[in-house]
Image (tube, rainbow, N blue to C red; front, top):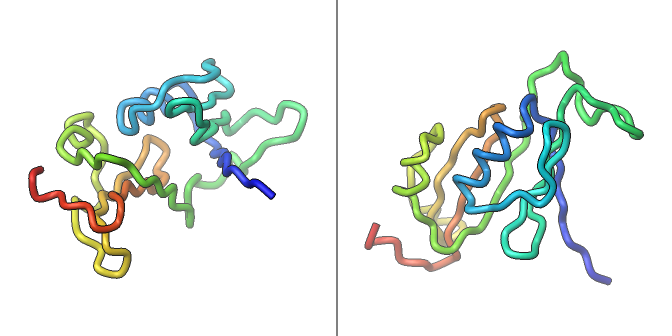
Length: 131
């Protein structure tokens, strides 16, 4: 069996969120538009964005009357973890670059435009002393 995660999150402004994730993760648009987006890194789809208020053929994927992102952490291993470049995009930093001794890597915790927690982590054991 092969499993490839393709998470989808509900957002208020697909194009704004797409631009944010492209800037922070170095992703590119694989679909584009105001209702739905596929974000790619290389040939891999890493995230789908769906307009919160739209149901399309399947109904809405979130309740538009509730805050989005509560209890969700979007976790990405990135190489290299370019904390200064990422912070220069204007991303809201929740927890600055730090070492996680349990995981043995460095992490930068951000909030995306809708308030989703986005964690960027280095590979385990990666030395970030040059940043």
